[in-house]
Length: 348
Image (cartoon, rainbow, N blue to C red):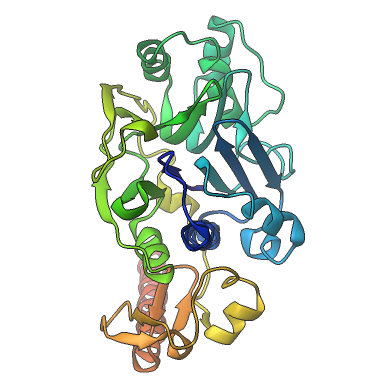
């Protein structure tokens, strides 16, 4: 299981404040998606005239403390159109920077969460080859030389596996493509004020990134087995998208379910000072006095008095933080007791 995230923005230029808000949202989404994968982090930043690629085989939270990733995020400017982000949990292919997403092929750049099962067959069918041994790279090699959106949809529909996919055609950098099938999740929120569509693997990620960066957005449903082509030229007070039916089947349904790749980890609640020290708050325009909602009681609380759980993406006031940890410990005890009982039953 990996995490994918990013945004698509209209050609409307943003002031410095708007740029900082989107930079902050991307940093937040990178850290939140780390709960889905810590083996690598990557970004592809595209404008009408240029593109920047960063990818490295390290966790997002660690890389955000480096000048390398911070300088890359600062390239998100008023004329940036599309950002593709990814956090990797290595399943096929070794842990290396080369094997991290985004992948850039002859005609495409994109990120993927899932598994591409029949890649060998389709690479041969379309006379393509890949540089790495990562299954996700093969998706974009198979799509290379597609001459129309219909042909892109046709090639995607020949793929088997589990997919949440975001990509662009390099010659059409003002259009974002999104697609998922039933085995993978993908959510989006449209920020009308900035004519920007923000998206991520989990809805809680978006809620948190919006709140932390003082952004107001309406959630947009990403339906399964529909190829969305989202042209930033069509952004108004609403997000308009072209939709093509595109069914990606998984003959091994449930073979690779999301929960099978969850990273097992006891929750650790970070304080505001810890987040600031680790660089998570840089350029996010948030202070100790900024009001944010508690994920449990939903009361507006000063950020300096909240505690943040990077696994769930939740922020908790002090009383609720104890309730949250107590509930986690209780559920773990129940699971442990059930396992013991089950073992005793098997021995009888």
